[in-house]
Length: 294
Length: 221
Image (cartoon, rainbow over all chains, first blue to last red):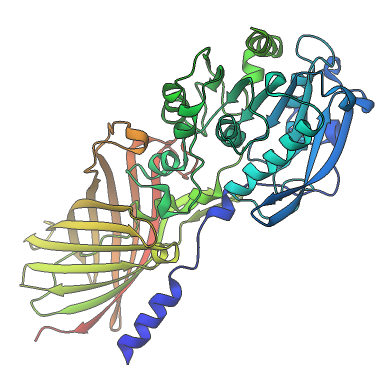
């Protein structure tokens, strides 16, 4: 009887926790504050990067992943009436908070070269900002795809599409850059501070060859996905990244890239979030512009 | 960007139990042990030990050799089977200021319940202990050993060991024996770029705190 009780306890304790839902470090909000969002001062770019109110269009759309639907909020910086002519940078943000946190970065992209030069679409994945639903790896891909479909419906073509992924956003950037599931295939891909995959996180965190499957099912497998990217790839990683190691994450991703026209930009002394500021805003913008226009 | 919270418990098999056997049991003696605690991490603004929980059984095979086996409940909660099996041999009994010495070899095995992934790590430990009144004080250096030659994405593994040092005490109270261990592990590994924020003053490795309770369920025949 005691053994039966023990076994019952053991079985009831098992299979009850997986960490997948905790991968996402989202921050919900009721409204977006854009330039008024409380963020680190060094994130602020100067007024030359300001976006005219008529060029900032916040909208929502439905995202469907095999029947799991959610409302996704996204912002388009630029003139929505000329998406069928403009080059558009699809910015997939990192794991922290929501679009407010990345708005300054999106502003830089919109103003590369000169004022309002590029259209920029940025979205909040499920549960980030005002977006509803449950965040998962597959849901994130569906959310980005829904935004790509929104652009495609307005006339955006592969040739005028650039993907830009930062940190967590490098997962949809790498996956959808080659996936037939994506409504648009980008002409070029930019990844900043990419991670190799959750297996590397587990290895690094434990100091042992421990797989991520011991914690969850999320793969976020950039080191594999990047092998299928044939387009030109701009890889940017801070050598002092204290969150995703330059060596175990960044270099592995770059090493696995087998396309043509790629360029690696190691940023000496930059941390996980500080690449534009360590490079200097002008140098950072010039680097992106040269890659996009090449 | 804050840490991926998914990995806060990554260390649950990184030194996830305190020192199992300080001194060998008598032949035929059996103990049951509960352990609680783990490496200290910074999470959600707090500095906390990872709450690993383990139940173990120790059995005196001979007067000098003890066998142990442990089942890790925290791992089970994350859909993994984790056990440890060990043999502990007393080389020296304490006498005056001279410590007793116990050598341990343990196998730590982890199997994901719903994935094919399986890992096995040997662990070696040498424990020096002193009897102070009714209590036992000890210091115990040891290491986990990595058997694989490659890690994720086929990258070579350059570090094959995960050393630690434990200091602790075992304090008897009625029919129980309570333990408090402090462990510093992975002191050869840089913490930067690792997603997990271990709380340590040296930016290397992780410090851990463990509590244990032991009850003898079968005395020497």
